[in-house]
Length: 405
Image (cartoon, rainbow, N blue to C red):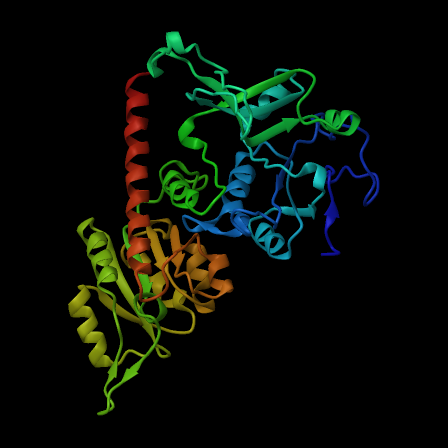
């Protein structure tokens, strides 16, 4: 990890020396101060080891943060401070610049444009995130102590109902914005003119232990930021048979007949898409262990057209997309190896099974928890349909907003 730079991150293009610090009040050439996002991602999480690169709803946890930071358009640079090689690799693959972690900055930082504007436009020195909680707090009594507990934030004789109480604002650790001067001169993240940014409870979830993970996945699938573009309304899906629909193995009978295994959950997933008017095309190649007889049976069982592709699937598939008068943003693609990289990059939605090689995972927009032949196709089908619902909701809200003007 000798190639890492050290934090605090300097302004790109404004460095006086390769490693020399900028003057505290230095501005960019355009007259605006450099706004840097710093994401701290230590490898030594006690509750969930390496949770920063664990897949959350198909995307590494740190990927959600970096995508939002980069797409926000308000930061001049986006940095990741880490002490772990694997986190460094994932961070770079999601567009982050990497610097070496320092213990005094070991807290979580994420991004929101509105919070940054509280500093750049309103003149605050520091802003941090809070979430509203409706929890009555009582003083802790140590074991063996004769002391009695007492309430901190309520009168038991006049106990309010939830709907009659505004609750309290609690720091949730999601984001901290501050000026460089405050950090360098006072060693503080919160000081000077302080403000807070209130997050809605549905957007705030702590991931400290394993049981928090499913809750976080459901939240991010419903409320998560999936990118700048409107959620894609897929009309055509391509799916590699070997390694996606099947587990990639061939079974040979005593008589020499070849057989493959297909999971019922995956065929149900295909039917779910077909019922929503999404055409599903299955792909085989000369390297796939699928004989002509098996192709016929597969077509009948799934109701899908089956197309044989060459070493570069894109060559054949771009013609199919053009024939249907579609664009690649209307296409979903599921592959599982290096040959699929171009299609994975090009498709509006793309996925790989959980056991795909790294080269394919890095190209895909979604990584399934399930492996090939064991429900990965069903999982991706559900993801596609979820994005369709999001697109419908956005369009509905757009129409409401237009009609109210």
